[in-house]
Structures are given as C-alpha cells and as structure tokens.
Length: 123
Image (cartoon, rainbow, N blue to C red; front, top):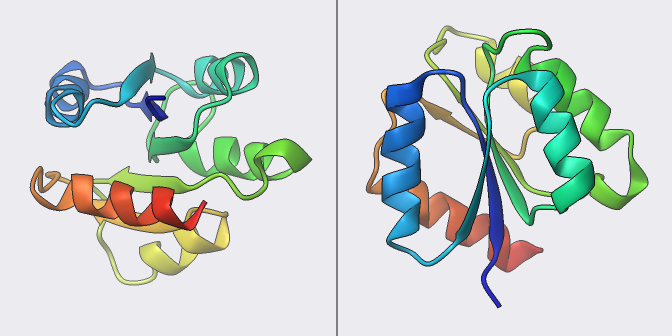
C-alpha cells in the first residue's frame, strides 16, 4: 500500500517541484494550498506524513501544525516544515510548534526523499 503524503504549499512552482520529486518514489500525493484546506484534507484523508510550508494564507503552517497536534489521532504524524525563513531561532520555533523536521527553501530535492523515508520508518 502506498503511503499518503500531504503537501501544503501555496507557491505553484514549489508545489510542482515537491510533487515531481515525490511522485517518482511511488507515494500517494495530496495537495493543499492554504491552512484551512490543509486541516480539511488531514481530517478527511488521514495522510501518513505532511510537508508543511510555514508561510501560508488564511492560517499559517505553525498554527496548522499546533491544531493537528491537538487531535489525538494525529499527535504523532510526522510533519516536515519547509520555509524560506532560515534565521537563527526559526528552527527552534518550528520544532516547538510540533514539526518533526525542518528543511529550508530552496528545497534540496535529493535530501527531501531521504528525510521523508526516515520519518516514515519511525511511524
């Protein structure tokens, strides 16, 4: 059975890069372009892992992550944050919100599948 990954990204080009990178690995890929949509997809589709952009319209990725973590069913779901913000202290804030890993943009398409694999093995 294919593992389901939700990609939450509002930038079409970034979404396309992530989607193309992961499609080659045989995952079932789900998409959301804002925080509200992400919460809806999570509750409806129950993905195995989420790739979460931090800067999102409507509800930012940190708040979406906090809300997901409050739902017992999803409290241990791996969430990988992706963001263009790579300032000192950002990683601590992102991990503190409940993300399991952090990948700065531009996304390293060689690194991303390995991080996902590590996260899914732990679940």
